[in-house]
Each structure stands twice: as structure tokens, then as C-alpha cells.
Length: 168
Image (tube, rainbow, N blue to C red; front, top):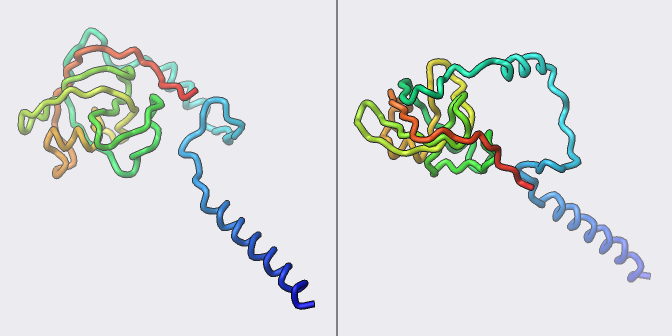
């Protein structure tokens, strides 16, 4: 009789441990293009169309740009960039609002003269008055992590192809 009462307790413990194991499973950071997960439709599709039809403000014949750069890092480390790459905050990449993806630039910090070759792989910055958002690694090498922003000169070395990185 005592043996029969132990069986339900063992079953309960096994089920409980099973739930704990499922709860600890990792969640995907991103979904691939052929995922069955659906996302809700955004209501601002008109705004999106207006942005897409807008002609870029940069001119491909212009090869030097000046403005203020900032940097981004920990909050986005390991997440996808706008071109589909996984963001490495210690890498040497940057975000620009309109330059084609994979554009190669020489960025010079005008405060200290340090320069670095940086590839564009993301979109941003999203703060008015800024022209570039460098990765933490790029900002560290350019010497403006402490200040947070710096006046920069961006020289286009090679225009990018604008290709999105597919994860298929």
C-alpha cells in the first residue's frame, strides 16, 4: 500500500523537473526569413512608404562629409544590425542613415586627428544633428568614448553594394 502512494509523488516530481528544464531553454535572438512566427502589422505603413520614396540626401559624387559622431554598444551587442549581421560592439563598424551597406569609409576624429577605416553595416544615428553612430570599438580607437561624441570627417573610400546579409 505504501509503494502505491510513492508513485504519484515521483510522477509529480518528474513533471515539475521537466517544466523547469523547458523554462530554462534559450530563446532565439532573431528569426530567419522562413520562420512561421508572425509579427503584428504596423499602423505606420504610410510613413514607411514616404521614407522609401524619399531620395537620399547624400550625393555619390561627394566623397567627404563632416558632422558629429556618437557611438553605441552594450545595449545592441549580439543583436542584428540593419543589414542582417550580428552586431559586435568591439568591432569596427558604424551606422549611417543613408549610405549603402558595406560602404567603406575613413573616419577622422577632428579633435585629435585619429583616423580609422570603418564599414557601414547599420542604420542610425537616430538623434538629430549626428551623422554617424560608431561601434564602441571604433569610438575607442578614435578616442571619443569618454566624451561620447566627436566632430568627424568621413571620407568615402568605396561605395557599398547595399546588400542585406541573409541567414538562410
